[in-house]
Length: 492
Image 1 (cartoon, helix red, strand yellow):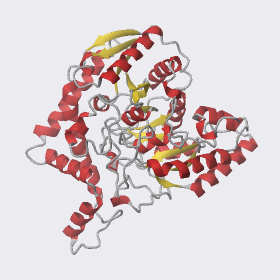
Image 2: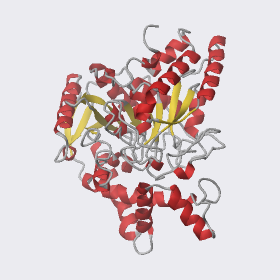
Image 3: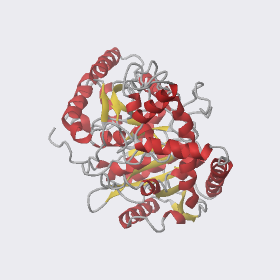
């Protein structure tokens, strides 16, 4: 094959493996070599499992040679955000408190990817406990954007987006609590899907905010994203929030003609604060969709302004509860300086957690405390219902909603670290989707004059991932933005 193996898409690699044009060992080794050469610049991997990956690849080659019931992603190297627990492989959530944690079991999505035949390269860097929008809060150092090493890749799934853009994996999984798949996908010029809440199992995915968290696929094309979703979607009885909704063939819908579809343009998503270059790129994308026969309709989502404050009450409140288990008793960091039980709790947590995690735990604990629960958490949940109703009303008129992913492109490392509020406001276009439990797809739609990727967001009805993927694929095929790649590592 003439194409560099690491330049293949997931779909191309799967087909090449089935045709025996390349072996799983060759494909895996090519990625491991590129990771060794390029990732020191990027810091996207926290744990690399070279022996395990090569062993899995060898087993895949045996199955491919036998030719019996070849699994859909047999021999394809992928990587996981480091909040998916992996049996026998370190899982840290990018936190010192879990620095040496080796899980005894696999998460639901990890199991399903193994059943699909993938080869696990390793675990990817992220914001600590998925709390952040820049991948700078990791205890193991920030991830860097492959398009500009002085800029962030977005967060919290920044390692996933960076590794994909830099050709260090064929596919990746991330999690999206308030935009943590879609925003880094936009910042790094790749595709990311936040599925409907309940579509993908959360079993074994380390919890941040349980009513908002959703695992999802990230890849370099919409087709690759559909292939990964196919592998991980479906009911899991170990997750009480897992949906019984049937799983369709997500790739079967990709060739559908979008002509006649109605797409909503929320007026209040295009007001003050949106970067002019992003506004211009989105407007051009709207014209591209109109050329495909899509009808654009102005809609109103009147409670959008309340989404960020609503989210930053609910998410920290649920985090303060979920992270109470990290107390130095059963697993994780245990302070050697504790003299009594209270010391053990206080010192283990203060030494193990970073500043942003501590900030959100304190904020959440305050919101849930006696005398404040009704004023904050209960009120936020009521507002959440109004935000969801806004989308229900919108989907009576339209098939999907089109919006920006972020109000600005990738910002410089350290630029917003001292201003948490500015960082939180970056989520204005993504958190409403999580609050409403809807699917959201981010895909490339342009570049700034400085050469930074710009992302487009499509939001769909509950469990209509097929419709979103089909619309996104039609747009992708009409443009060439997904073919652009960063220069980092050229010549390797």
